[in-house]
Image (cartoon, rainbow, N blue to C red):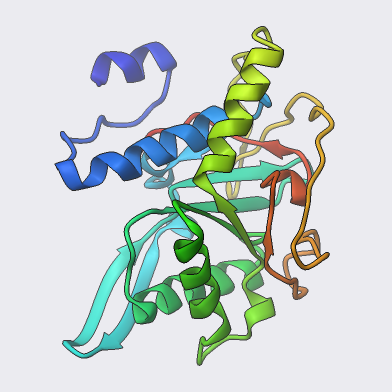
Length: 236
């Protein structure tokens, strides 16, 4: 892994060997990174986000076992061309509704602080999408529209990544290192290729960071908020 990171030019320490229970999650994050790469886009991975306090914070929740606290950061973060970040969460193993609410509340805080323009959840099946939606709609400390939520199936990500790679094998390019800014490295990416987005509810999460938006199940995630600029990724 150290050799891979050296070749990729990613200035982070390699993670340890993942437990078997994490393999599906890592594969999901890799598919999302592939989807971004063939656009082409640039992105920050979870390991890179360790360098930025704005993308790691405490979450807390109560359940039948008592009170819990842990640190949380997104799996990936991408940037719109206007510089606003979009968080990406790959959710394949079901978490409790209480813990999901705590994570969504953290995204609400990031969004209202201007650190984020919303969050995209990538789920393995329809049950996963419904679980995230339920947690967002039953949050006791935030409104549903505060989250800036977009829901996408992992199979959609896989299909689109493969289709775009087959359609234009030469589209994958390496991006130059971005300039530094207060919120991380900000990049100007190549112009996004045209794509169609479909929303089940007819609304997109394209509003500014401080305005509400309606969650959508998108056939073309992230493009709903505009073209992304992103830096190199590594898994949690």
